[in-house]
Image 1 (cartoon, rainbow, N blue to C red):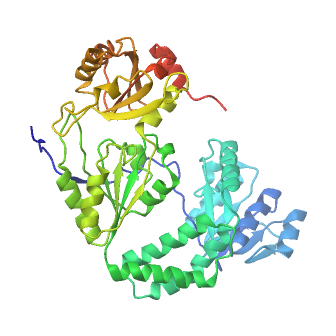
Image 2 (cartoon, helix red, strand yellow):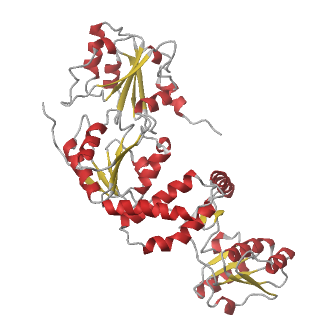
Image 3 (tube, rainbow, N blue to C red):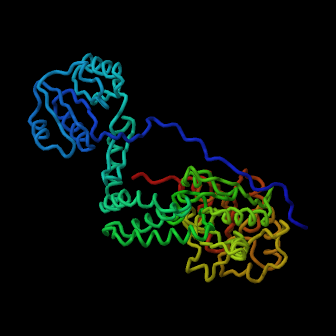
Length: 490
């Protein structure tokens, strides 16, 4: 029976942005006049931030604290002028930003109202009701700057996030960001198509990530420029087959994340969940080219033609596949089709669904007391039925752990064949749907009774069945399974 064609690849749009408590923006203040009303310790920190951003800061305070006097004498950048008096509405005219430090709400409200009347964004320290702009945590690798905000909901949590990012982000990134600023005008002046310029910055970023503490050498710009020119001369894009893993976006590899964030087009399977697609560059075009064992599918030939056409237009195409693309993902067919047209192909492996399911179950696929061999088998042939050429002696090997892919429509037939060939019907078997995802479902049983349990239990999504003696130690009820899925508090 030939494959039924019921739909073609279709374009999608990225998911709408989730609601934001605040809008993160970066304000350029170099050489611009800003007002700080008040001379307290809290005002000192805000004045220092403003000066560090290159602003010309006017501090208006009757009695500035000693720390403010020290800051005025030695600002980190920009300039700070101290005026020993209270602020007036006239001071706000033409200012780019205004910050006030007041104890009383009445004084804070008057300052905020005057700033808004003058068209000046305002912040009143520790009084969010009077603020147009809020300050968050800052990770400084200038010109790389990261801002963090919890909208005042959990300042300590925000500080913890900032500390984590500080620990993860190499100090050397500041040198690479500065090099990027120096080289940007040169790259823009090159006679390169858009794809080649983008490739320059991809190569730059890969080098920065690999050697963050190294000083970016001047000769590197020439080397990257040559690589970008080669891309531009070829005027052909590239295809990257990326493993999306079993569904949890935190299981994506770093290479997979980089590919998704640099893609022009993402052609993805239906089984790739939205949480994984959310990692991708928002501007990337998204095309659903799903293949489902029990539902409408796109023809493989149509998918091949689509991906090749997009790459031939010079685009960086990510072919995103659930699990690992080299395990029952038809990657071989897509690679052969692209190489036949001279399109370069790269493969980024992913965590397989089998690995994800085993991790969720906390069971070894190769338990040394029960398994001498690990085998993967598909229960879905080209015609949608159980393949006719299965090796039953291999599938009934009592010393093997067997992972069955795409068994939803054919497991009852496979299980009957296993028992008929001599395998014990009491052999442990576990069905796992949506492995590693929040809606993961586990159904425990044996080869003999799992088909009935599947029929009696509501489930949807990608399904695996694991059978063999190595899986006999799994929790035998849904309560235990649910408990094991609850994260441990830290």
